[in-house]
Length: 232
Image (cartoon, rainbow, N blue to C red; front, side):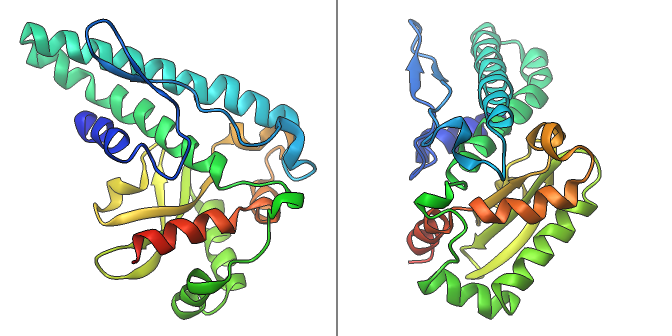
């Protein structure tokens, strides 16, 4: 999983995401940096407060990046030393922190200020696919909200496209597992972060209110662009 996560980011650079810049150490080891947000921290208010966005980006996402890079360096060292025991021990840290970096890099692009199209319903091929696979956009929202509210502990709710079956799917993943852990043909379109750090300062323990409101700033244009590319 460690190498597959690294390869996933390297191969796609999470395109079309402006994911963190790739950095090269003196040994040629590929590491990652925190991506900039495409909007100000307060741009999603009142749906998501500027304080939450700042802490979420600067503290939580940065921690995943820092710890992912640290684990990659330790992995590189262990492999150079021929230390399989350490390589195995590092897998959980690589999966958790690498997944956190992947997921949050998608999440920032899934959001947009209202005055920049946030919340505007999808049109074109994605809109038609949602109607076909879920009945309506409202039915999709209700399904994802229900899945998120029922998710025990921390994790994510995803709208993805299954490239093999050529249909949309809703999936949940625990902790920081990326959608690809549910199947290699799944590509994320929308990911809702249901970790408490994504909403607690504003919504307290009322997670359903957070899930209901976040649709007001969902960037369906981004999701549509990914869908059209991946379903072509």
